[in-house]
Image 1 (tube, rainbow, N blue to C red):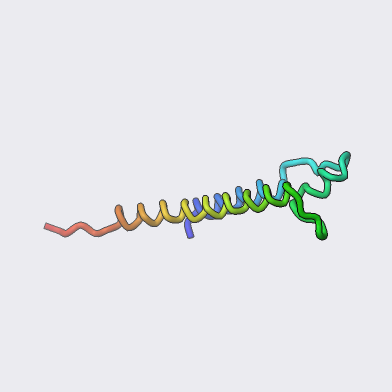
Image 2: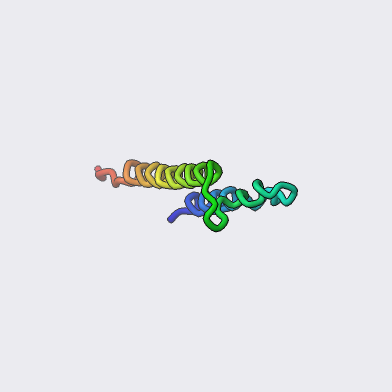
Length: 81
């Protein structure tokens, strides 16, 4: 695992958990949907949160593929003369 992967994971967790946003206490529906799940409440917000999670997972898989493709391509030993 590289530093870039750890940084991506920390950023994704920070954004997904809405750490930088204020919790909307002025609206009950927005409050219940803020973190994507409350009891048996399933609505369009839940779908958006699931889609968001899938995007972060796809980004992590893509980042790992790019990092390791670069390692195998650039890391191969050249024959010495």
